Length: 313
Image 1: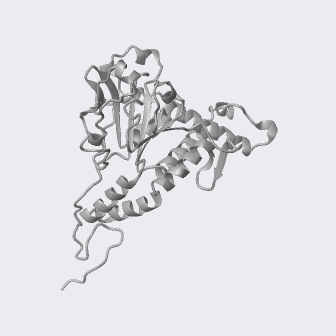
Image 2: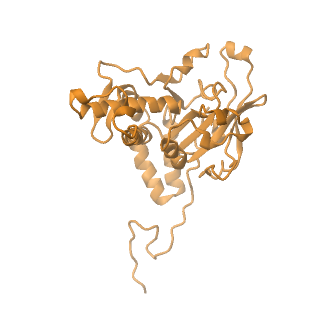
Image 3: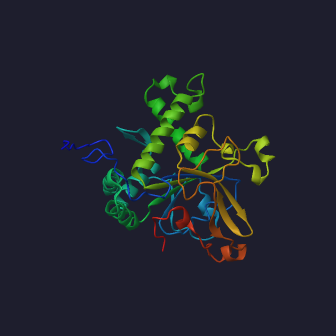
């Protein structure tokens, strides 16, 4: 009789056989979608249960009706504009306070314990325990709106961190002027730190809503020709979003409603990791008239198609 062994790291049972998982988490942990400005990206999330809009530019103030599920990332309590942390360096105070409260409200410590248990076993029991915890959260989805403004907030922290580490006479007012390379190293490092801080502490699922780049060659494109490579980000930052995203698509609005197009339009487009979204056009909201919007109504939405584990009702 062969000796049975216990494998702690390898996905093998005591007999050395591959452990076959029963369940998988379908909802994208990082969703990025882009579009032209003023197309209704934020509107599809306004006053939707389970979604918190982290407003990075005050856009929700212009809807003409109360948006109850939003928080102003630029606002903070106290006099200090930045918070120093051991793991992530200096962080914008408004974002730090928001994520810290979300961490407690969503009980993210328990979430990560359950997620690790599910990731190791992938059984029906561990899956159900994880999903049950997710649905107890007030905001399992955090939407950062918009990516461009989020990066500006990140750059302010990068500049503050730089100025804290140099002599007063060497301090700068623009992070892109800290060196001859336009501060790229500082910008990228701080952005990766802040992005990790949000993803690890705020909510299980993060949506990054962005615009297409304001470039002449992009504006000449038709809506059908817009690609995910047209995201409004500088240099290497676009790769941080597109390469590391679970799913990335193009947001579109028609007379029939709002859709996210996850199809690959050319070879430069990245694929979608989530099988239920790959190469599909997903409707996320019905059409709504301007008259109904003025009355404070919101469109019927179908976020559950993208995030099937979450009960939105």
